[in-house]
Length: 123
Image: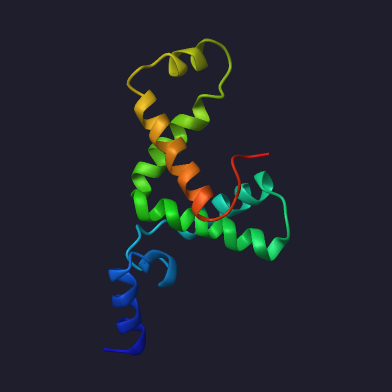
C-alpha cells in the first residue's frame, strides 16, 4: 500500500474521497464533457480564471460523484431541451414524467454550486 492509498482510505472514511483523491470513486465522465462543462460554468460564473477553473471542476466532480455519466446526459439533455420554443418546447415542458428528472438535475446543480462556492445560479 502506498502513502496515497492510505490517505485515500482515511478520506474515504471521512467522506472526502471524491474531493481529495481527484474523484477516484466518482463516475468517469469523458474528458471532452468535463472540458465543455467547465467552459460553460466559467461563462456562467465569471471571475479570476484559475479560481473559476478550480471551482467549476469541483462542481463537475461533485456531480460525477452523485450520478453516472449516462444519467447526467439524460438529465442535462432534458433541461436544455426545455428552452426550445413553440409547440415542441411545450410538449417537453408539459410532460409530467420528465419533471422529476428536471428537479433532480437542478437540485444536484445547486448542491454542487454550494459545495464548490459558485453562488446561487448562472449569471
